[in-house]
Amino acid sequence: MSSSMCMADLHSIDKEAAVSTGPAWQWLPEQTRGHRFVRWQSSVVVTKYADCRSVLSDRRFGNGLRAELGAMPDIDPRFVERRRSSMLLEEGERHTRLRRLAIPALRPRNFERFRPAMSQVVNELVDRVVDQGRCDAVVDLCSPVPISVICWVLGVPREEAEFFAEVAEASTALFSGDASTVPAAMAATEKIDSYIEDLIERRRGHPGMDLITDLIAAAEAEGGKVTSTDVMTIITSLIVGGTDTTRNQLAIALHCFAERPESWERLRRQPELVPNAVEEVVRYAPTAYAMKRITDEDVELGGLLVPRGTSVIVMSALANRDDSVFPDPERFDIEREFRLPHLGFGWGLRSCVGSVLARAELSGALTILSRRLASLALDGETRWSRPDTIQGPVTLPLRFEAA
Image (cartoon, rainbow, N blue to C red; front, side, top):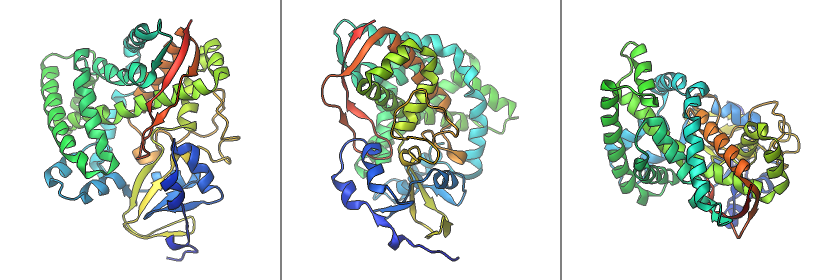
């Protein structure tokens, strides 16, 4: 295999990244400007839109999080095997089969029935803080939304929201690569698997207007090829993968609008812009700003030789700022026309299967919030989580006026 570059030739961003603070989409573009690929520790960072799409569509690039999990010290191999069966980490034919089962049940029209419930959740949250004129948006508005919606979607009491929140937080923390998070993640996996397994059995005897019933029906339509374990895997993956990401992305959206009151006013005047505003938020500041891959064989990518076993970071935060695809990419524009889709929900083989639900939640929340809050402004310093593979505000103090 011929190549004009190898990893040693790449510009390293280690020093700059070590001292950078705040959201990754703010400091990464400056550090990588003019470079198609850069090196971050032992990883190759892919910065251009076309290259990122190529990697995400190429089966020679395996799931990097899956590889990281197996490499953690002193981790129970039984737990590794169970987590690898998750849709978030699964590979090959089973991953394809799970997606084929999940996608029909996750079509946009299937979530229309949940829109009133989503609106109710957000309205109740606004009711609690609207008279105060200020709040911490992360705690008071954003964190409760996805878990409450998951309860509606699964057809379980909203009193279970705290349980789902604890399980999702413990499971998501594992993606940081910190070995100290493993015991809590193992316990969370046991709890959620047991809960969902029992829920599936109850739905078999008493179907409802919920996602589990839809998935059971889809499994039966497959002629028995899909098992209860498969259904449980899909539901668990939605809970783990769709709660932390959605709450972060909603908080990021409010941060973006609080910094740009003119955009908030435009959204209030033109609520039909909400769906496009969601796409622009996820393009401009994706919570899933980086997707980890690993090469299963030697690969040549744009003239760069990437040896087998190399960690590759698909930097969606940079792909979404590629000016050859998104004109004036540093501008936040809720009326932006998208010639090509952003990569905030991934692409290709491993695009986010829960993106339909995420879009519905974000659209529903912004619709209610822009209707009820006449103004929006920062009311202190926003604190950000550290940049693992997802990032968002830890605290977001806002002040506002009721509409």
